[in-house]
Image (cartoon, rainbow, N blue to C red; front, top):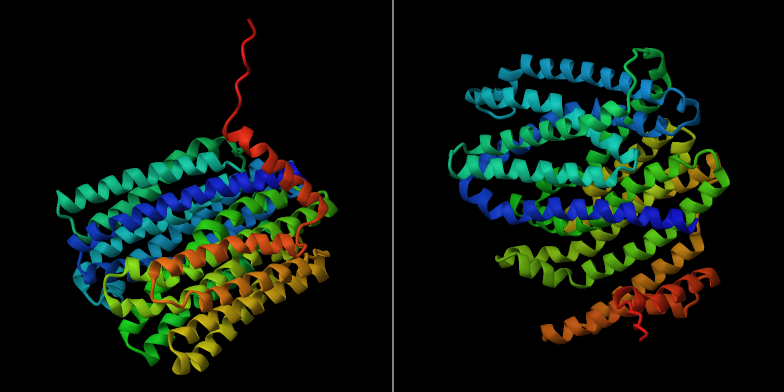
Length: 498
C-alpha cells in the first residue's frame, strides 16, 4: 500500500511540474501578447475557442472517458490493443465530420459569431484546429492512463517551447497579429500528435473490430452532459454577473478567480491525472482499492487545506502585488471561497471512483447536472445581493452538493466509503486557523501581518498532530521520514581507514 501511495504522489508531482511550467510561460508572455494584440484580437480567439470547444465537447469526453475506463478493464485485457485502434478510428471519423460541418458554416460563423464576414479565413484555420484538438487530447489521455508521466511531461515541454517560439517570431518579426496565436495553437496540437505517435503505434493492433466499441461508447456518451454542466459551473456566473453588474466587475471577478485557480492546476488536476490509472489498475482487488482511494483522499485533503490556507491568508497581498490598479484589489475577498471550492472539486475526483468503477455514467452526469442547476439558481439569487461574493458562494455550494451526491452513490453502489471523521477534523482545524489568522493580522504593518500569517500556516500541521489526527502507523512513518531526512540531504561519507 505504501509503495502505491508513494507512486501516486510521484506521478502527481510530475503532472504538477507540467502544469506550473505551462502556466508560468503563459503568465510571463502576457505583456508581449498585450503589446502586439488588441482587445478585439483576444475577443476573436475567445469566441472561436468557445465555438470549437462546444463542438469538441460532443467528441472528446465520451471517447476519452471510454478509453480511460476500459483500458485496464479485465474483460478488455485480451483485446486492449484492438480496442485502442478502433476507438481511434471512430475518433478520426468524428473529427472529419465535425471539421467539415464547421467549414460548411464558415461564412455564417464569421458573420454571426465574429460579427465580421471578412474573418472567414480565421474560421477556416479553426476547422483544422477542430480536427487536431480531439486527436491530441486522445493521445495525451492514452499516455496518462498508461502512467507515462515523464513522456507526457516531455510532450508538453516540446509543444510549449516550439509553439511559443513560433508565436513570438510571428508576432514580433512577421507582424501576423492574431494569426500568430491561432497558428501557434494549431502547431502545438500537431506537435503533440506527432510526438505521441511512436507510443500510440506500440499500443495498438491494426485490426478493425467495431464490436469492441459497444461498452466504452455506451459508458462514454452519457458523459457529454457532464462536460456541458461543468462548463455552466465554471463559466455561468460570468454571464449572470454581466446581467446584474458592469463589465468591469466581471473583469475583477475573472482576474481574482484565476489566482484561486492555482488550487486546480497545482493540486486537483495533477492528482486526477495520476489517480485514474492507479485506481483502474486495481479493479481486480476491490478491498485493496477501496482502502487505497480512501487513504489517499484523506492525504490529498490534508495537503489541499494547507495550500488553500496559503492562498487564502495571503490573498490580499497577492492581488495587490500582481494588480497595479487599485480597482482590482477588492477581488481578494473571493479567493478563499473559490480556492476551497476548487479543493472540493479535486476531492470529488476521489468520491467519483465508485460510480466510475460501476460504470454508472448516467449517475455521474445526473449528479453534476443537479449541481449545475443549483449553481445557476444561486447565481441569480445571490449575485444581485452580494455581487462577486455571491457568485463565489454559489460555486462553493454547488461543489458541496455535487460532492455529497458522489459520496452517497459511491458508497451505495460500490461500497466505497471514506474517512469522513478525519475529513471533518481537517476542515475544522483549517477553518479555525484561517478565521483566527484574519482577526490576528489586522494591523497596518504588512511585515507584522505577514509574520503572523506565516505562524498560523505553520500551526496548521502542528494542531493536526496535537489533536490526534495521525494514526499510530502514520506517526511511525512520519518519525521515520524525519529521522532519515538529515541523511537524505547531507549523506555522511565513510572515513578511510589507514
